Image (tube, rainbow over all chains, first blue to last red; front, side, top):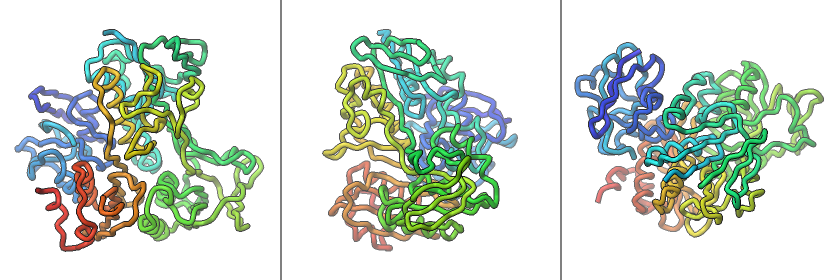
Length: 107
Length: 404
């Protein structure tokens, strides 16, 4: 279980507990948090679950695999350091306190 | 306005439609009617990670069950709509219930084609891949060493074959057409996937029709049209899906490869709409029906907006994906009407097939090549067509094509 803070583009914060084993994307979906669409359901096929990770968390997360890296390159206004696809981030206790911010839109 | 909107069909399209209605501020009553006993769920993993046993049931649901009540959406699961009376504005439910609607959306999806009963299609041990119940029914047959016959080399058949091979089953796949994926892809893509499956031990037999299945109380195998006999412990049929349009047809709506709608998603009856697998719509001067998650979501969202008066025309760049073994296939666009295919090799075994009609780019199949997929998708969205020779040249920096 990890407490994760999702910040909408407009600034609205959602702080929720997400069980281990789910992804950060599924944590948003299951709590009805807008701004993460995840059209493909988490198959790393669409890039619509893009977020900016809080700078303090960039180095603490598992590295991007090449598939995620390539998909992110074409997401909406990606940031080389902070952008991640939330469907590729598995929740563990180590993610306690993670803060992510949604982009202006998902494409 | 407190219009009651009824949506029939509790799959990806229906779920997207009701969520969009609420998201856009519709505050009248909304009812979602679904035949299956569970809330709307994702179908793609059924033939992939769920069948492999790598994804638990709870993770399939598109929204937690509480979502519907929290958003004042009346979700009727396990409920069959029997008839629609468009003059009266009513839906008759199995068991005698009735819903009165102001506007109605049909997101009834599609039904898998089955082999005729006369050739053994109804024997126990013959499975289709469409619903959670279908896949749960076949799961116990997926034991290492078991022999499975897959009938049909489309995406569903190929994904099921990949899961079976990964689980150590002995897999034979027969395709009646001269090549697998014949309806949806170029020969280059068909050959690439036939090779992939053969390297994983699948016995892929193209141009091989089925005569009949064998067995008395349960399927035991098949006889092929060339007389070959195959033994099998079970059979999976992936021979396509048909739009679930019977309800619409009985209601007098126009049917043309599914429920015929216009660019906004309207049928000819005011206030009655359709979206997703069940609906055909105007596309590139013709009419098309798409069987995909992208279309289920996007067309439904257009219909939701248009039910609320937006007047938006749906003109998508379709996209699609398939997972087989360690390969992710991503497709952007629709290759219908292509004249030639340009093959582009990427790094590390990645490859992409670019479909052209003349100088116009229509679609891209990308195998483990997300960059080619995303660049192709963005080019198509922008209505741009790089010259085929530019794509073919290994010296071309694809990303640079998006600039300027």
